Length: 136
Image 1 (cartoon, rainbow, N blue to C red):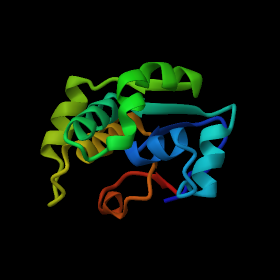
Image 2 (cartoon, rainbow, N blue to C red):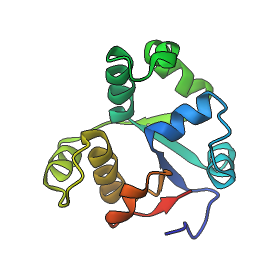
Image 3 (spheres, rainbow, N blue to C red):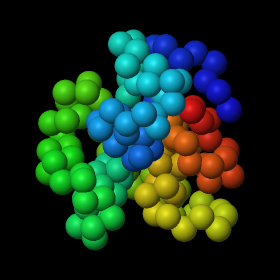
């Protein structure tokens, strides 16, 4: 699903989109780039993304993300992004999401997108299995 209005709206970033933005990676789509840089938009990053980055860095799955893992709050402020905390409602919704997808980080983002009515900026096709608005 595409957002009706891409400016002056709130968006939730998937973790890979956040990393691609921070690293100026060309894999970031033009639409995602425009949504993130639009000054009227509110860009949200889930606490789950911080957890995912730190975990994957510790496990060696994101060896290039050391600075991000250590300085994420500061990097988010510099990028004018806000943190979306995980609430009990989010946790319970993520825990009972149907479907075979088992990634706890993705499940949390899906639950947060649904509960908060946020489009999720992601290139991950697994999100299409769930009733949540997507931007790519």
